[in-house]
Length: 241
Image 1 (cartoon, rainbow, N blue to C red):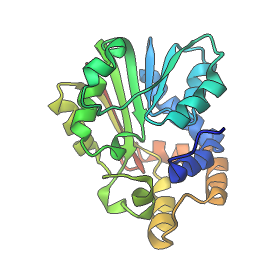
Image 2: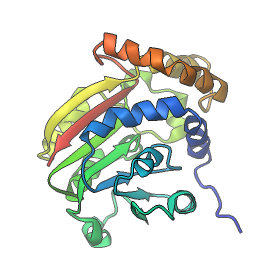
Image 3: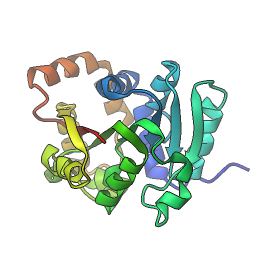
């Protein structure tokens, strides 16, 4: 019997984004310079980004809150030698340290891409991310930008909020994490999010729109460089414990 899908909108979005190979590679290349040693990914989903680390032979632990995603990850990557394991992980578990004692202070890099916006107590989420890091380890967080862009997409995906570099940086600083890098990412994505989720009030990202966007990623990368990453659909902050 197949495990039931409890996150239908999220699963559909991951499927659509998963087909955007050039976009996923761009996101991976953006965070990879800060990814060292043993790595833990929070919210691995269907493995859209995990795959790049696996293929690059990095030592990586994959985690997700949902059992169906953990099972999918096991099926996809379970035989890989550089996979440290797959675990179900709740970033705001009420007994986090006891529940995940085997993960505490174990990793050189912890990253969470499009995860923290799903958590109401984002301060606690960042605090628990820090507990997973060794001293000197890197925390990489990517979240959606600008509360003014909050629309039907966000609501359907279960987002509590959107961020700016300032608001995300505040969470790092409150938790005593030294910020070593911060920028916006994917300027052109702002227009697609606003038009499809705001003006057209669609429930999910149209696959046809994502396919066109994906083909033009080399152009979008150049646009980000020209704008010096001063505006973008996503906010990225990297910190050191």
